[in-house]
Length: 296
Image 1 (tube, rainbow, N blue to C red):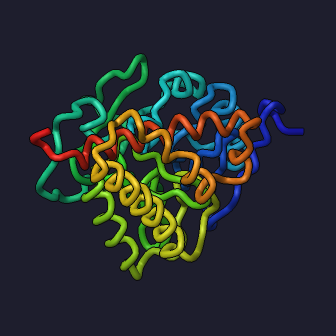
Image 2: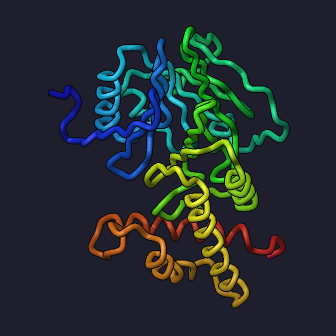
Image 3: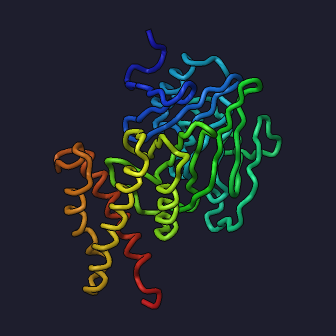
């Protein structure tokens, strides 16, 4: 009998001998890497009860301590979820706490092992930040490198997490598959550049998107994300050419919902419809602001 909260169906999927992922009740993907001496999480279910359920099921896989939770972007952070699993170290990009800071020069990956005396407090949980890249090292005899690299397209602090030499990449919300990406924080030029580079990669063989199923055809998931960004951009540019106001972007949402919304969110009677409608509208408003000529 499982010890975790039965309210949640925490169905972990195995990607590799020591790498797992789980899709939360809200459709977000979270990951887990089990090392010989510790465990690392990649994002957390935002709901504290579901976070506890996930944490309890991982404990059935390994009795090793949780070393840290890597957050792929600041909007994935939940202090309540962190507290629910005991307040482990949170690893986040610098921009999560200083949004105006943006690293411009690459830096060498820094190995990370607890304890870190300089880690700051995050509502009771220690915090470790980085500017360009960071590596979490698990194990001694059988070493696993969890590499975190700043990308900054989806949001000012968005990162990729790669399991070195495994071909497995957790993209966070830079990539969504079967679900439109949230455009509300995007730097669209950088985002599309990041995705173009990812599409050319020959080392990534398994991609875990922020939403949607993991896939061994990464280019297909990347193309799906790019297609939505380009489609939304085309529509918003047409709105601007017609000199329509920002408030009118909402009229674009139904058509985009028809083309890109997952089945669960296509019916107006579904609670998921209203949630996605608001998210898509906010993204289009941000896109409108970004495309608006700067002298207007």
